[in-house]
Image (cartoon, rainbow, N blue to C red; front, side, top):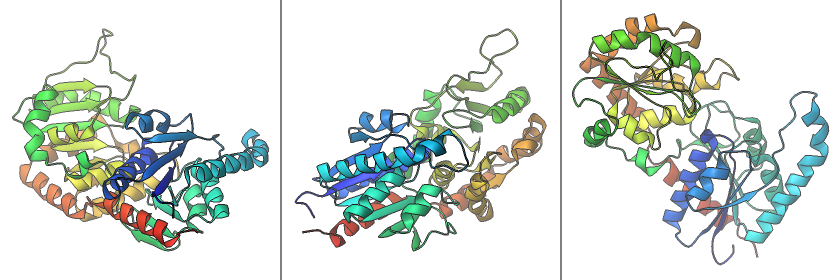
Length: 369
């Protein structure tokens, strides 16, 4: 191992990859303040903005989608993929990498290949209940495979939980609630329903809540609606939609504030979201994304089974469903308290620290002359 620990993290594209990657980077930095931390990503992914914003070194390689069917990407793959592997190898050599940590996504596959060729230990973290292609490839040669959910099928996998920011992992919702509600212009008293489809929003959630908002407001329920960037909801007159007790924002920087303000959340069941809700003890109604390979339903199932969440199909979600099912729930403090306790008991708050220990140990075991 080099004199100073050099850790390279690879992955990105979406917040689901970038958020746990940065949480692990922070935990490594806390455990080994002298460590050199480098992130390999692509120019197209969220990492191109988020990684430099928090002060970590970012190196870019070409985005090379793994071909799943005959198309233009498949024709280009035999040329582009080896080029990305070579670029990754050059970065690993330049920074003297002692260990490579991958979270999946297009960028991880060539970095895994480069690390294997260079004899550098590989650590994989899989965030979803159903593992992605990149991590299925990387796990075959990994020294350590950590997962956020059971049953991924990855060889040698161990359950560690979802690495997340300290602001969420250590959130005290009750302590932060007064300030959080004030920040969003919400009343201090009365239940608050948080609705979010993530940074991009979810049209089906937005439509259903828009229809239910007047009746929810009449019942004393406040709504904090995170609509998604560029997806402000308009009324019939073309101005932003308003209703009693209804507040909409396109994006929240620091979701812990929204979690603290809320009593119940209606949201998608992305892996990061599900794990965060469990960690902070926030009751939820999960609406799995109806497209993809079904991972969002798998992500949410354990929290539902534990009693911390309900689940409804996207096709069944409507204003009427919200009034029939969500309204009785959010106005029942005892039921919410039971769900909060169940969610919190299911949550894992120290996954980033667990992964940092495994990353540092893997680097030491793989020490090279």
